[in-house]
Length: 310
Length: 281
Image (cartoon, rainbow over all chains, first blue to last red):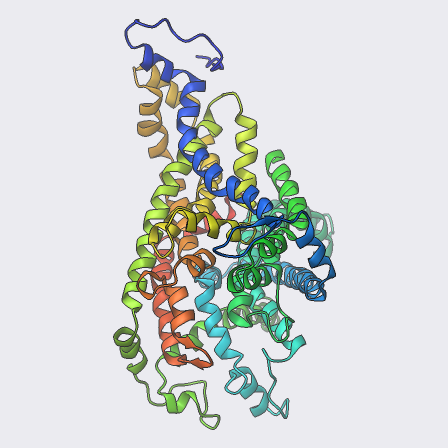
């Protein structure tokens, strides 16, 4: 039986007929929209509206609990003059690019390791994914203590193994603080890459490798010509997801360093929070949050189109 | 007998890197656990070997439960996570079903809109959202986070469920319709039961995401008795420069247990939802 596409534009059934309403609801177009309306209205009210309202706010001089005045692009102009804003921009890109590279390479290594046959493989996979499922703030608290200036267990181990003579100030030194937030982000996100890429690896038939081996392909050749092409779509999607959420990361730097020392680890999200929420300068905060938009828009549009194509 | 060389190769290719990953991924949890049962004199001594506990104590747990609102925070966190998960599953399924199985005008726009909404990160929205919630008079109520969390979870559930809904053969639904079932009945009695694994996957993933949420809870919940565990821990166990490390670790460990427990029961569903979007068989 063929289902014909129905359209809401069709004339409604003549009123007065029995079950007219029931029949209208059975129409594909009407039924579809009845199902969609609650969710779509919700998303319009709490995603689309705040989004456009944020653009409106960014064009205002507006503080908490007071009326705003329209100032055009003055907030953006002020940001462009502010060296802290450019430092935040640089921090965000450094954080995103370095963390993504490490997670990608590390995740691929993790996937290749677990993809071998061994006893307890499922258990290992379950344990390796733990950093990704435990609430970020709670695990980051553990990392604060691991990186504590005085009682860091890393420092203790390094000192007692004789590798270094002095304590590292993991969160107090500008460079080390950036290394630390990248490290913790990697710790949390690497399993996401690892487990997803593993699922990709498991779609490759072992016959392919055998055939290639019989034809004399080396391990490297097999990796380049069989493994990588199969993994490529998975890798692209996982990486784009991960980049979007690393670029806009808030929780981890907020808890671990709060942007310090001297703004060295402030990202767009944490700095916009300090400006818009802690200082209560809503307009400027909204403008700074929107500074993320150009890069995010490229990623979001790219990934949306890629997902649609799949 | 496996030769020595084969075994050596296996150590190098499997056991060493696997051991490295396991230690690297799990050490922070070990550290969390042993810190939470160390007495303060062990915690704040540079002389005592820190890798093990010499005199374990449950004092930090007692203090956490007696001196803070930890149990209230836990109740709030779980209540919010359950409510938002259920709401998001229902609304998400209602969006996913027509998108996956029916033809209707505007389908392409809705599909793109939902995918794009899923990818819009919270930090882009939190400042205008704070003003919206203030104007609605919802500050310091759990309704504030119950209303805002689904903005993240509905698009996710919809997007994940679409894949499952598409996999159910059309003939089953059509047979039910010929037998007199309405579209709604066919969906409820035929398609949804066949998609139970998808509903479970989406629900578990949404539950962990809801427990992980921090930004909206930090902004909207500023009174102790409405806080969630992450916000409560960060704001009340760190006071100025004073860190209550033992209690912090106890809170981090106890706060992770609900998620870890659910996860341990449904690992496969969780992994399925993690990989559903990126891996096609």
